[in-house]
Length: 471
Image (tube, rainbow, N blue to C red; front, side, top):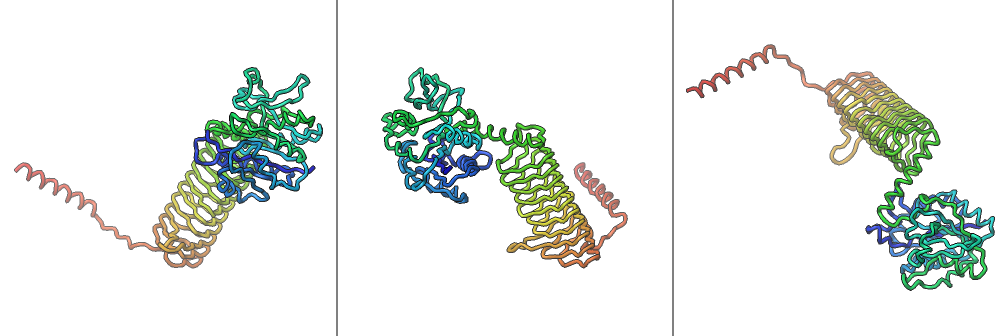
């Protein structure tokens, strides 16, 4: 079966009350249009054409990462029928079935589209559409059927009679049309009250000409909702969030509170991972098996390997955390970092563009930037890699099994050899040989009785002040 798709994305979206084109509003990390295209890419399509209106350049720029997409430009907003006509050049030479979807319906699923195509082929329809039962039909076009149950036409809400407005079965805006039937678009009349050509009118035109048409009530209201307002966008976000969380729950991912977890659609999570409340997993994040993600964690475009533990209030960005590592609480893993297997990054530790070896520990209050740190290293509290000289970033290299004492400054570029010790409170500006002890402190002096003399002097001064006040 030859299959192409047209995405109608030329709507101005005035009711969104936003300067941003309607289809570029985001939910779960992607625009509405990207969600629609992602679903379409799961089908075996020969061609995808996106119809764009006044925001042509903006929408085209947003899709530059998507391959094999053609564009059609509807310069004037003359309705969905006219929008489909504008694809004539883009789909020239294509013979087969054209799947038509709306760019503002990000919740549509592959199953629904595939079911439509299956019924379309099975019933040998020339034109088919998906309908659904709406609790509040509102502005949806009503599906009009005859006494035998066959579809006769679609009536838009503004043109419907009072009795027709009571019909609950409505049009989803998803069609399967054989390319040979596209000539019917030219017969769609102008709706004078709106000044537009309604694609829905093609159903009645086809029926009058004896062309086989089908309408299949196979979708759910939640999935097929169109988004025209900010309120509907927020509702769609909740639906998508709940759908994603529910799906991962089926795959043996455990959630302490499903209502407060936010997972982007591209995220992958392994079995037996436990996720606590208010966790945000964003972008192309991959979580391994048996991990624990504690509350208030945000992980973006990162890989967390099996059995790692991410503790409370931690932010991880564009980084790799290897198996059995522990990060947090209150840690920040900045882009370009790698935390080794079994390593521990603890309270208020910031890691930036650094490689931390397996078994290494930085338990609290440290900054590790532009560093290459070996295995089984101990980083004492308050350690800083001083990586910036005001002009350039420099690298700190620390060998395996090094012990770095607390409150140490490592002024890069500098190398600490394998097995070396750095005493607490040191400022290291030169390389430290392997197995050496590095110290950089002022000589300690203990002045006996100094505190007592200071105390007696203080009492004497107070007595003098008191006598002056009396006299």
